[in-house]
Image 1: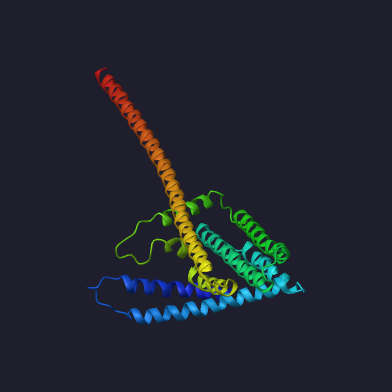
Image 2: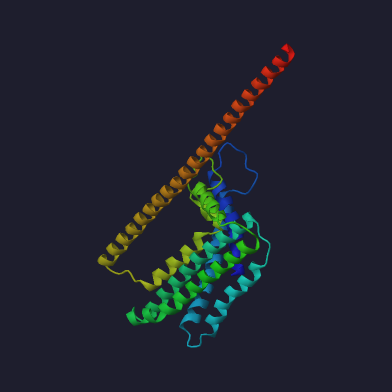
Length: 297
């Protein structure tokens, strides 16, 4: 887990450097390595990170399928060690945002690892339905324990640091602005990568491992299998496009609501200021009239 975090932090810089090298203006003088060295660095990084993810999946596979559940118990107890190390620390709003993003990434990462374990196990047992129902309780136990520990952790962090629950709405709004950010001609990174960068998530190693596992688990032989594989790929691509549209729509809706609230607040502020100005002017006039009356007397 520590190695995965280190690889994620290091790999994000490698991918960003490769993207910037490939998209920077042609007329600009380069002060760094060219495209090919950055591409080779990225390949080496993705390979090493994919090997680490495969080791994680193998360890989880042994823990779930072993008759002795001691390894699975040890892996689940690591969540409570994380709880102990996070609850009593001092957190501000920005630090809690990083913790929340890291928890989201860990849940998705764990879900992908469990999917890999299920695919490998089902393939070894000739895709028997009984095998799936035997694995489901352990997989659900791992996921639910992760979610419960995260809930407890965030509850105590907000309690001890006196952070209001509304900070999570601010986090959601920040992710919405990242999601809805427009493209730029010479962008440092692709707009779809902003949320992943905020989360500290790099999909390439997981994608490589998943493709490798699917290639071993599902054999494509014959015209019918190729047709079904092509249809499955088209369905996944369509689902990805639909998911992006829904997420962008939700992000735009959150941004619109936030702007409406700001406009109402600004309108109220302007109204209050205008009322204060009118009151001050009327008081000044009354005071001036009083002075004139005193002078006349």
